[in-house]
Amino acid sequence: TSVQMDPVMPLHPSLAGEKLSPTQVVAYDGRDGTELWAYVTAKAGATEARPTVVLPHGGPESRDTFGYDSFAQFLAGQGYVVVQPNFRGSGGFGEKFTVAGNGQWGKAMQDDVTDALKHMIATGVTDPKRVCIVGASYGGYAALAGATAGDAVLLHGCCHNPTGIDYTPAQWDEIAAALANSPVLPLLDLAYQ
Image (cartoon, rainbow, N blue to C red; front, side, top):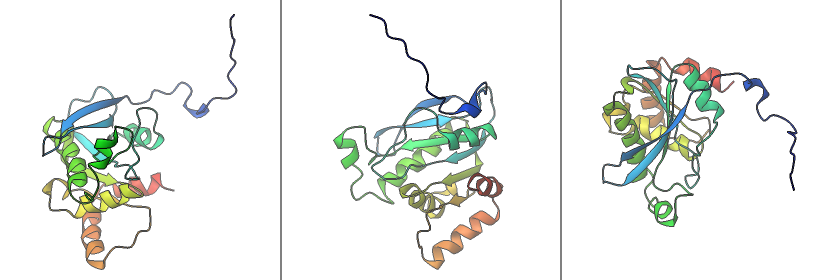
């Protein structure tokens, strides 16, 4: 028997004939030796360090998946490297990995996000002076924590959290100072319109 299938409708008709930026799985070690990985989307062929957007997922027991991501493709199409780390606590990689995130908000989970960025800098992919971290839901928390944490790697970055979560005025003052000098902010405002 043979079965013939006819497409019902294309999922993304506006992408027909478009060249998308490739996505790779990039393995890296957390500062405590935990084996981690991120999905990295970037235009092919660039050899110099590029501006980078770190895009931690929500949840936190959610996860990013390998495949088409419209926001990652939009940013990569503008010349940004997009790093989507699957930090400890992410779901879909076994119970041990998910449970390793318990009680680790702002601690080991945040370190995993920062360590992904440090790996991209160390391998020459990311320009450390042109970094941004963006997220919603738990990713929004990770973005705010990443922009205000003691790790100097994100001090030149910006942060965007469209969730409307309330934070203390002291935290917003720090974030506002980081955003004031960010070349990425106008792009992010455009992306969320």
